[in-house]
Length: 282
Image 1 (cartoon, rainbow, N blue to C red):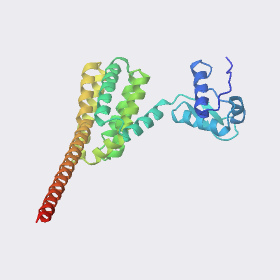
Image 2: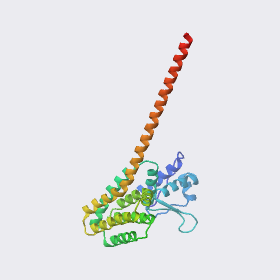
Image 3: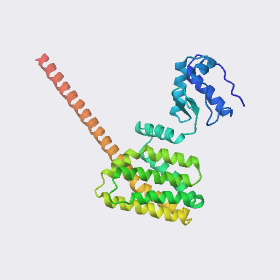
Image 4: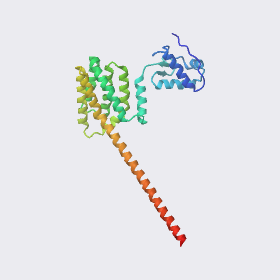
């Protein structure tokens, strides 16, 4: 089915270009793998400048539905793709950094997602997927492994299990949520008092999670996954709440001191006025 491009209005041009491309995707006229016409051809069809077209294409590239290859070869130009994992992870990480979501919100989302993925993996995961996850757990058990590599492998393990569950959306969301807190988890791993003991404890839970999935014990795997997440991720939540409480106490103390200072100044002003008044009467 040929794609029929239509000119767009000049008002908020790049958003109208986006809307037009989205409509073609929704109508099934653009699919993953399809290439867009070159900018020099597409811009006149839309009736917009090439700079406005590029802005729209950059937005699509950022949200993971388009990849642009510069140059003049056969692989150059813009192509529709399916790449939601990186885009969602980037978006969620930015919103988390901006304070749109609390650590508690992220933890509860992780618990809900991973309970579901571990339970489903116990039913649907194939041996090949679990063997790959087992290899990751083995690498995490190496004595000399440092927190940074452990953290990367930890993310891989949880995403692998989510992928093996057979639900692509659960896998994508698990990856995005876990990625959003990866820097905080790394910092927490680097600050533990006994890294060796912490690593062994976390990896023992990973090994048991895999055993439960392999043997089809989905509910037990879901329960342990929740315990595993709340155990370490929960310490980050506790730290966040402690910091918030400290900030509130500091803010409250500052307010009380300001009120006391205002009251003191008012009393001093009243005393001065009284003294001036009595002096005038004398």
